[in-house]
Amino acid sequence: MFIGTDIVEVERIERAISVSGRAFLQRVFTEREIKKIDAQHPNYERAAGFWAAKESMVKAIGLGFREGIRFHDMEVEHDKYGCPCFVLRGRLREHLAEKK
Image 1 (cartoon, rainbow, N blue to C red):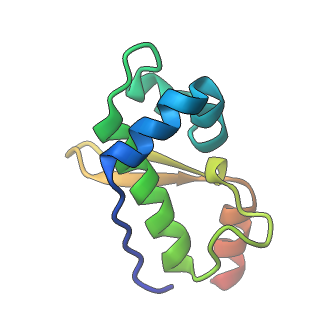
Image 2 (image 1 turned 60 degrees about the vertical axis):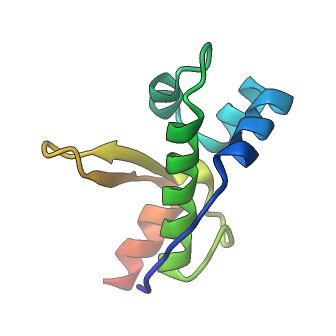
């Protein structure tokens, strides 16, 4: 695993949501993440943070969105201290299990 970072302009995510609406949200975020973003009155900063976290994850594993890895394979959560963490699923989880 490598170190992954990502910076995204909040305005870029705001434009994507404004143009594509729910289609963008559903393509990139899980239903739980969408509830946290609040699709009716979007919190663009939160959406941008989730986006950057997911981009950082795929950079850290060194694959990007290849080999069947999708945005929905990772869900941004927060631990009991409020620190961000991931719930992993699908091909991403399988890939990381193979690396052990």
